[in-house]
Amino acid sequence: MNLGVQELLIILFIILLLFGAKKLPEMARGMGTALKEFRKAAKEGEESEGQGPKTS
Image (cartoon, rainbow, N blue to C red; front, top):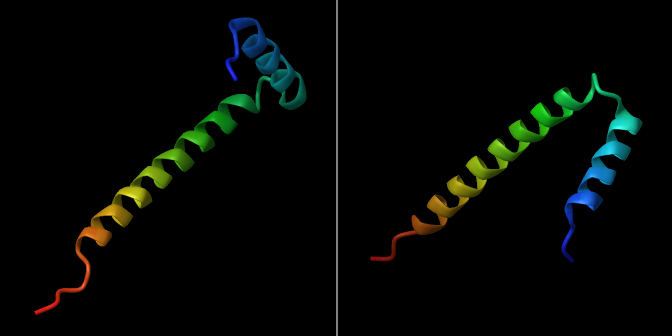
């Protein structure tokens, strides 16, 4: 499903109407922080998988 420029602008306009211009930067900042934490946790999970229990 490809979204064109017009569809994205309509979606952004609806979000702007729902949440207001003042709240959008706060929401974007929160989403950025959440994404950063998710990536950090995913990377730590990959590293811990590679360091499984040693069998000797």
